[in-house]
Amino acid sequence: SGKWAKAMAILDDFEDKCATPIGKLRQVADAMTVEMHAGLASEGGSKLKMLISYVDNLPTGDEDGLFYALDLGGTNFRVLRVLLGGKDKHVIKQEFDEVSIPPHLMVGNSAGLFDFIAEALKKFVATEGEGLHPFAGRQRELGFTFSFPVKQSSIASGSLIKWTKGFSIEDAVGEDVVGELTKAMERVGVDLRVAALVNDTIGTLAGGRYNNPDVVAAVILGTGTNAAYVERAQAIPKWHGVLPKSGEMVINMEWGNFRSSHLPLTEYDHELDLESLNPGEQIFEKIISGMYLGDIVRRVLLKMAEEAEFFGDTVPPKLRIPFILRTPDMSAMHQDTSSDLKVVGSKLKDILEIPNTSLKTRKIIVKLCDIVAVRGARLSAAGILGILKKLGRDVTREGDSEKQKSVVALDGGLFEHYTKFSKSMESTLKELLGEEVSEHIVIEQSNDGSGIGAALLAASHSQYL
Ligand code: ADP
Ligand code: MG
Image 1 (cartoon, rainbow, N blue to C red):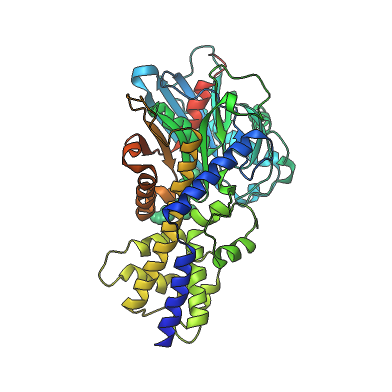
Image 2: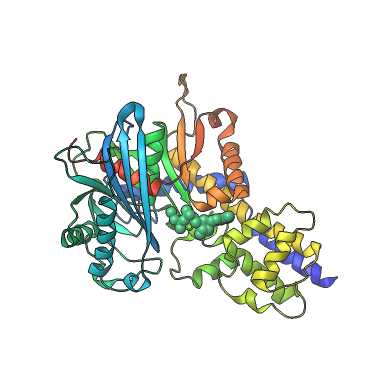
């Protein structure tokens, strides 16, 4: 009927505009490399902030002793304790505790929040068991993963630019978050020194490198997305400080904010952006990360409902609610293997209150999920190619006989749980690199970088080294 033709026309048009042929992906990768250069050349030189992390010593595996970590980046925070046994033993023991933050502290004042966290640290330190103590006479050291935008000023200091994710504590904005935490720890009486302030992406890079010396970059694909990599300090024109002894510096790309005229953006993406909390920002993130993929699907379905009566002669009201369709639900529909697509049917019924959908309708929805996920996955692969190009690792060099491997550590719920997404990303990267180079490039899933990675960075930036 005419309705089906109209709905299919909307879907086909969307598919065309989302297309990511290999030539386009190469353009995106090239643009990423160009922007990386620009962001390293000068402050504000690019949409890519290319932030200097002050991490110039990634863990090697030789670290030993007891180290703590605090991971704060959402409504829960975690405290961890890791006992490192040096070269051969690596992580001997790790323990952690998770605490949820009372909502009133997320919108109160700085001392309120940090005192609460310091109290939790104090309690946790008090549970150190047999053999789980710092070396005699040494202060306990902590790696602090703080996943909010920070302007870093040294490895262990940085001022809060703004809160995100539902936090709003005015008197903390502009303050050094390490200073705020340290003052709180003094007030409650727990003696810990913050040795490193990082974000989850840097933590993932550190955790990955600890396990595998060939790790050169880390990518987060979760609620949001970001990447970090190891740059030669001499290749950072905007760095005017003394060159680190290691000759290396970890760069926090903040790649979620990447944008390029080569990105395949549709009317749905423009509307999502306009109605978002940060219009014009984080454009790359808005087409590839877990926070948004489900809502792109919803927007296309809404159009099909409005203009093609895809779900009958009225538009299902729930379909108008932003973010009602979450990416985990989208992936459950996309990966439904039952012959009657019953997962699709039940998600439509339970979430969008659309009962009794036909198999034909469900198949179209699976197709729509595929278009959105594959675009995101292929663009993520192009981003990784951009980093490999910047490092000169996208080609095998003449006479490079020993086959230097380059490993990219991946973390985040989207990559971990959305198999069709991660498979597509990995196969696209192979396609881009070609068979020969692909043998040297490894994507390695690396769990819990934001926790253990910070403890490892406290170890590699310890005051006792
Ligand atoms: P965060 O990014 O908030 O630190 P995670 O790395 O755990 O946390 O990622 C969580 C995100 O991963 C969710 O917001 C969601 O977008 C995505 N995600 C989680 N589970 C799934 C799933 N089964 N399928 C697709 N995406 C998922
Ligand atoms: Mg995370």
